Length: 576
Image 1 (cartoon, rainbow, N blue to C red):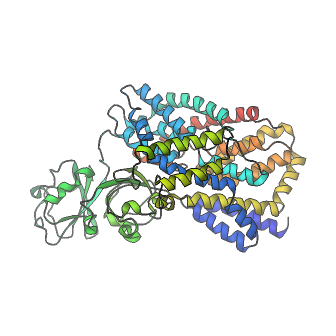
Image 2: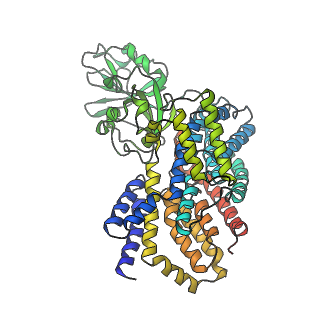
Image 3: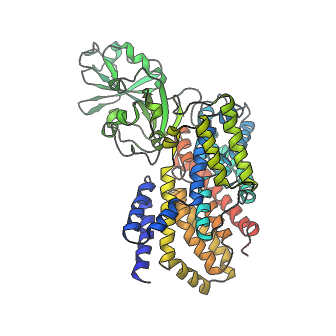
């Protein structure tokens, strides 16, 4: 290999290593790779433009933007109200069936976010018995169609760029349906071993509330008992932070001093009762938002807040909101609220200002769960237009009446023109991360091809492997994608493994479709880790699961998923 080839190999390996090290920032990794590919001369201007204007990538972006209007309708909320029943079996099958079918057409994260609170607050069953099946149903349902999950469209865009021909809408359906049925049956059996965690109703017992004793407070010098701080409704004083020292447990006779930080745990909806005590200020008080509506959010893995404290982020300026309380699964949060280092998956209760809903950075940093939502609801003819227009567009494209990209351009234009989707919605929800990852992956593919590495790998495979090795190589491609999906992100895994899979198929002189589909299905197989897929992270905290819950339920599910996929791929998509 020449120097250029070695540089490309080093870039590819370094990309994977960087994704493993910086798992919460895949977009930043690919951004650096993009800059390096350009400045090192591995790609030229025409390849850059071809990558960012790739039809498959544009289709993916348009689909995600067009789905915004659908999320504003009552469709998912109507489904949510009809799922929960007194019978656990009836509830489970209604939940699994409705979520699987919804995820075949809609954004998985939006589907799970809509169902999260109805499931968590249901009056009949422990949320822990339902929330993990909710996430897995969304993942499995995404394998049913081309538009079921972003990774399917990522693979489609890479294939179109390589061969000029993409995947059909129902190419995934036969294998996907078998996966949904088989894994659904196993998941129902395994659900009996899910923990009975979580609590119904408005139970926020894990939330952490920080209250400061002002210098002029009349409580100074009083004991905790005499001040009445031990008899609050649904709030419990767990510790006092004084001069950098923690006092825990807090004795009833402990005297209150100026500057004390009183740390409560409990139901954040009861936090307003602290206003009855003179000289007590919540963290949100300093920002003038305590009287606002409360909104519950989850911090995304790629949020700018991860690894930082509230004080260092300038939270109020960023979001026009103040944090009232924080909850973290698996460990106790301690100390001053403003000095807590935030982590991906942390639940925050926000007191929001008037400008909160219009901020463009909400969906890049938070998964919205309840309370104030940034999107307005659609009603009347706009709601019918949103639902009917989306379903008609998908149907016309699915049956080949019109190209999906063209149909989505028309649909988005109609949505913007009728006010179902605003320009601000598009700015706020534009999938910058996915756009950057896929376009950079396309550029990396150009570099691999131009360097001769793909042709060299194909030639070596052609001389070293025979048809007897086909299944082994197919399995290796699938499991490599699964591994990277669990370790980095699903879209990044699909983008990185695709060139390898296509090279293997080319070297063997066979139809690349089974290997391409192995990448697509492998990138959807995130069952073992709560961090491999956003919906897993959402239910991980809401259901108060532990890591071993995912391993205990997800590992056998993942093995059955692999068995079904690897058995059916050569049958449904012959090597040719």
